[in-house]
Image 1 (cartoon, rainbow, N blue to C red):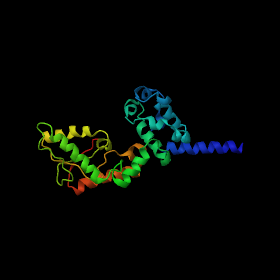
Image 2: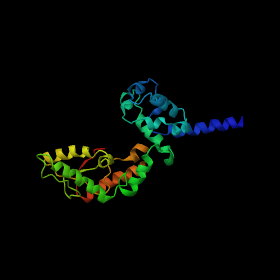
Image 3: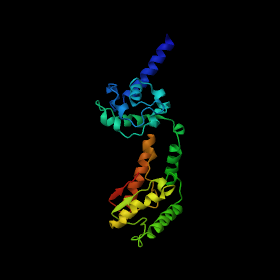
Image 4: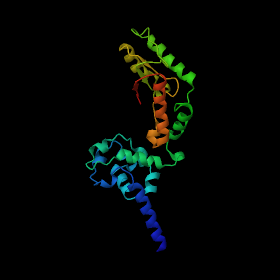
Length: 235
């Protein structure tokens, strides 16, 4: 009997921990609209309605160790259709934040650690980054009408600063050209920072608030140091 009481108390503590979140998950009426709107619903049995019920019931360990929170894309379609106003993406992100960092799936944790240390998720050295930018710019100059194109790096006082998604200097360099050619045609005054240029904030996706703030503060720091008012964040 004593052991049973202890189990009940532990369940109650877990329930109180989740219940303290300000996401209105206890208002869920299990209508299923979230599940029907979710693009990931059904993958490995994922069901946002069931996930929210687990949180409401205080099944803390089961939710934290589950794969479901990492299947969610946090697209917020579920939140949009929820008649009770449950902020499901915020609940999912909070669950992710409770996972041991070494157990965060995929490359997210290692990529974030690399970004905190080097300024980007690839640990790409500054000289290599600048070389890639200039190499893409050279390819653009070979196209008719763009003979005088150049990529402005660390230009102070520009109107617009743009961050870079790490894949764009890794496997998708062609995708850089679209933005740059629009800037050139529109005679936009823009620039790219050579340090802390990463636009993919994996602190956001993994529920790591402190790391997320560091990544954001670096972007703000670039804007302040270069005296730029406008940001394009093509994450």
